[in-house]
Image (cartoon, rainbow over all chains, first blue to last red; front, side, top):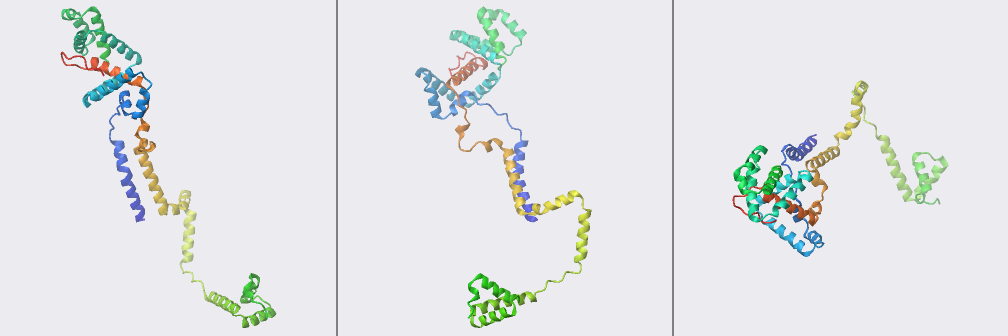
Length: 163
Length: 167
């Protein structure tokens, strides 16, 4: 009888505490890996095989962009991952709309892009009404053309949803 | 002279019948005459007779005075027991075995481990690449483009900062 009690007590010690603790402890939400991280974790041979299908210039460009991603600080990478996660949750049409806007934005000269980015950061936290008020101001009109105003309006609306 | 009775199984049976007193008188005399000259048969019969006499001397131990009373009590208990008790009583010997207890412990431990970490129980250890989903370069390019866009437009840049480096 004592042996059976000893076995039961041993099994309780072995099984219950870790399982119990693991189930009771609130688990941090698992962060999904981005495609870039999955690519980095792929075996090198698999990566080379996938890249071999591409033209040399495109292959080189991907490798360069990955290298730059790896040069980011852990904090920058984490912030980027979080932003990417939120962006991935948007409906596909919203994602495509944001990409189209960005393509348009990239066609602007560097100094205009810089000015637009700064203005965008001011507009994003504002309500729709306050945004309209700001865009109607003389200061705004002195700095941005009507086409830039439209683009900023769209950008502020779109990227307000991906903070 | 009679041939040795120990040499065949059939003749050995004659010796056993002699020991048990089952042979007719004439046959018994023949066996005795043979034994007077055959040491092997004499030895066999002597061994058998010693065994028979030992068995005759053995007597079963006397039943204790309380035996009948205890038997009657148990019979009464069996009759009055509920159907659940009668059912579990038949299983009690199994529960009482150490092997059963050990098997139960193994089962509990296996269930505990599976509940604790069901994924790692399925994926073979030591093959970290097996879990990595294959990804095409186009998907990577798309993700890098999106990240670049988010860096430029969704992040808060410092004043006068140039566009973030291309990813």
